[in-house]
Length: 246
Image 1 (cartoon, rainbow, N blue to C red):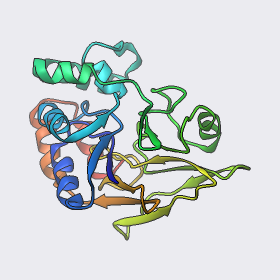
Image 2 (image 1 turned 180 degrees about the vertical axis):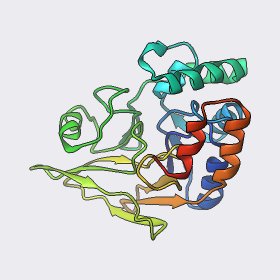
Image 3 (image 1 turned 135 degrees about the horizontal axis):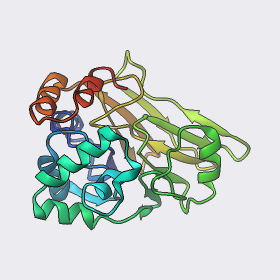
């Protein structure tokens, strides 16, 4: 089975469209590690696409915040403003869908998907120390996670945790062969708000039969997404940061 693994779409329709076009024909099912909404200007289009195309989805912190499941006091002022705007524009049907998304981990075919980690759905796993602790709570040896907006992840080789790096800026893909003797926390990266220094939309494809993960990056209409954010009256920094991938 080949799985298209998405995360952190953040209502960026231009980025999602580019990923859909770039990945065409490379997968059998689509999975999402959460944060369908927040920050971007197209929450309804994004949720509707996920509803129609994803076989399994876990909730992200923005999905919770934008649908009344989480307190906005934990959000910075920019994220809070975007969450309040999103809550106002989401249709009742899309809000109900996002509100009903399950808390990770969700297991599929011998691996699992989460938003933050198996320990805490809102945890930011950014370094080996956090990853080492999170590995102990995994029920499968391969886990896909999001939340950090940083493509790559971590490998546990039974003696130490190693960092898995993102696709190089000079390339559009990178292969990762799954070693049956190791455990993996794999971040496909963010589609709509990359924060690893590469503004291209990020995703991954997991071929379970081949034991291979392909990290991918694809350019998209950043200017179009920025214009929508500004026209919606959202904080300008949400548009500005798209061009830098920060």
